[in-house]
Image (cartoon, rainbow, N blue to C red):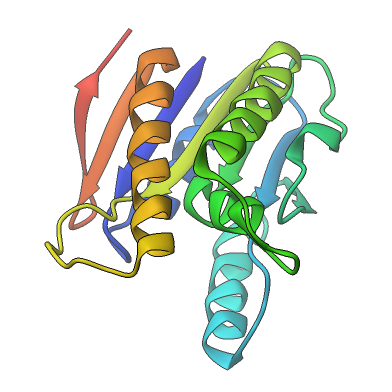
Length: 174
């Protein structure tokens, strides 16, 4: 089972994704955290997410990029939090920005490897498409990358869900 869950910031998508992963068969239950901690705000956000997972039996793997290299046991259930951060980490490196087409290929390749091994995969992604603001060219390239990845993952997914104010809205179901 492959599920894509998207939504605005603080829409309840992470809480919903964790609940769904807990309901699915497949062990171990692996939480792939893609965040890099750059400041106190991010540190607090990570702390909040860790507290949400506490006692739920998740094995946490912190991996901001190169997810194709993580060990996924056959038949496990995997939650990737989040596509948005993973893509930003792959695109904006210390060496500079990579081309979005290159990053898309990396992410789709790495995800395909995870999907082959895991019994269930949930990917959480932020909706970045509704503010109507024009940004600098590299940010617009990133937003286009996220749009492409949302479309590609929605095509691959068994379920596509958007969280709105804590309520899941199903766009695609098995």
